[in-house]
Image (tube, rainbow, N blue to C red; front, side, top):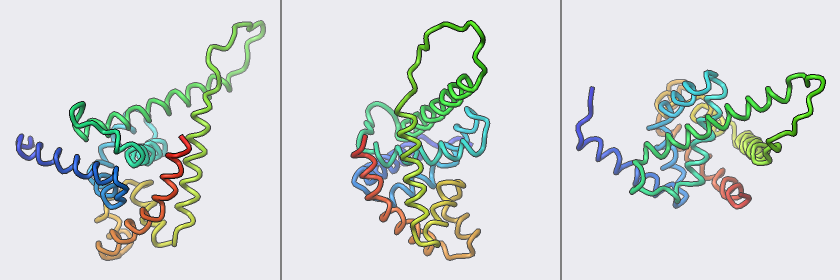
Length: 196
């Protein structure tokens, strides 16, 4: 079923406004962007990677990038949806390259091999992994009800409604828990941005 041009324009405008709010540090706006696009981002990552676990990680990483880079979004260059999917595609391709490089390093060295390595170990990948671990530790340090809601949203790709059903909690309670958790994590995410 095709959406009307007016509905698409309204959706694009709403998403642009949410990205502007994310750029101002609004965690609930990020949660709404996540609810609207997480399944699409996950689907794209899964098509590229072919692995559910890695696609979940890329989905989380993509929305982490949205949080960090929302202020750089330029509406004249792309729709908000296209911009977010480009972030996801780039993150997924980075994972593919990283996995391919790791496989090459694990292959046995052929006797007589004397070629010079053309690629230096990418420091940025280890730094990104360190950041991911830092975020995971911060999520684990949240109160259990908040960390569970964040895990279901960002690691499992569930919407707020699905999380409420899974936990047997009112939708408003789930949204509040995610909003509180995002507020607590905001300081960490800003610290990560400053380290770049």
